[in-house]
Length: 221
Image (cartoon, rainbow, N blue to C red; front, side, top):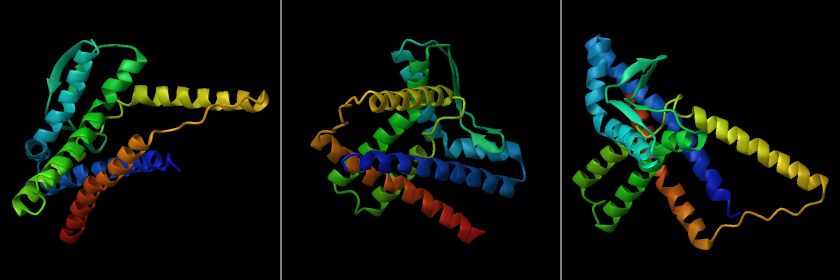
């Protein structure tokens, strides 16, 4: 039962990922419909999502520096790739699988941390009753929540690592069953479980913001 929040958070992140892809694509298509120009639409899109793009690429950059991985040119201008809007990029040098995974997941780790921090600070300071403060919070959550997911290239290492760990775990379970071995159960401390519970609730905020945004698009259509 104590692991249920891990599962909830996992599915919330998947839902947020799918929503963010839909939202960013709809935003781009809106500007393309208005200006009838792919170049202008990308330019306007890049200006609107510049704060989120900056946080995204800065996360890659700082994690790479911290892990002593060479970095190259930083690009903050979105482009169209396979029908979707791609955020900026940071040239990362070749490295081992583990560091590549950490660098690839950096925007997600930083993004979730920032969203939790903003929600906590606004709540603690009693700003949620202020319409202007609430609008700023919504904008911050919208920016970060829709910019924190890594590209397919960033996640290549993560897929490899997850596949390896999954196969290893299944093989370990097979050995335990074959030779009647008792594997130690995964136990989480009460404080950590409570933190996961809070995080699972806070992640509903960016999901709600994206759902509201998509609802507005549907009403406009």
